[in-house]
Length: 150
Image (cartoon, rainbow, N blue to C red; front, top):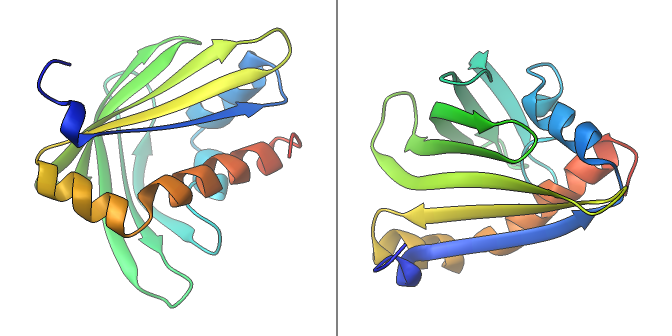
């Protein structure tokens, strides 16, 4: 990660649920769109294939109706440990970050760590400026609520 520290965002939460439950919510194409995104946001999925090598093309829809096109491409799994993917601005759009979700078994609880390495320092600063850390924590809160661990 040398040289990327100034454009890396890390968000963590411990969820009071077993690792297998958290992993299942993250890799189930029916479940993920139900909880993904910050408070007040919803997802409209165009295509979803969460298997290794898959992708997810979707719109995040804000509370005010604003549509934010997204594409998670090149999903790579290390089962029960980590999911990596590229974040694109809309379907096959420009990449704005390499992202990962890491899962750590804490004996009945699960530590989830989201990491995003933005393409540029400017993109990192923009994301930080609009509250991406807080929004990411809200997303993990919605995951916890979805699996009954909030």
